[in-house]
Length: 308
Image (tube, rainbow, N blue to C red; front, top):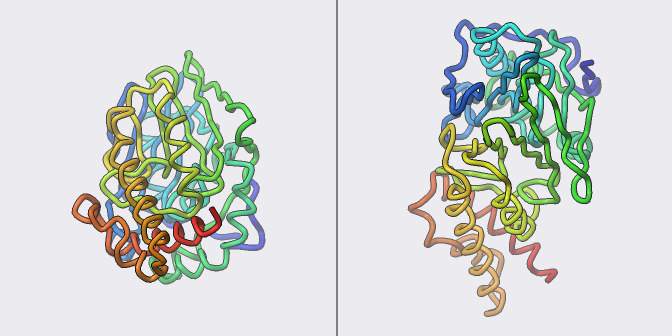
């Protein structure tokens, strides 16, 4: 049953989107829409993250819903082009707006919203800022239409066990919660039938990873991620899918260089300003939005490593 966060956008309607989102079938029954590697604005309608859905013989599970009600509506229309099965689950891989603000489009389906046990507290801590950002980036109409959904089922991080959801026809998906990494509330979804891993923002390709959690924890998480029995990954940002576990290597290299560079700066008595300017500069040509996001990453990691 849909549970809305009544402190936020109440009683709104979902804007209509004439066309369904374009999706690729990356494996049988696994559909992905790839967002653009940009910041959200009126030109791209906030369509900046990867979203998808998994079709079983009895039901559908959605993995992330996009940055606005209109994007969510387009995703729902893409589902309805392919199946009339009930949309039983909506999995939010973490609380960042570009992955959850399309939730309102699925209200009429009354799905179970699934999230990390830390999701709601992390979301509410930033709710006002997220609302302002939505209005600034996409306009008041989109902000007025946004309704956030509190999770109806949560998943605990280690030592918790994955949540198994049966979509019928042998299609069982495993939802796993992670210790702090990209954020403190990351989830992944593994479709066991096709060995397809929806990694959310635990995996970035093409666009620079952004650190809103624990960089050292993220590197540890990548070791566990690499051991998952997947053949392909759907990253949170980047192409619709990529071979697994090879897709981890660019991100692993970036985080390692960033951490090592900052440790070197600290050892020499350098400042946080120097870290923002210099750390991981050797990686600049390999990533989109490097100059925009790397200084903030460096500041985050510098502050964390001071406590080592």
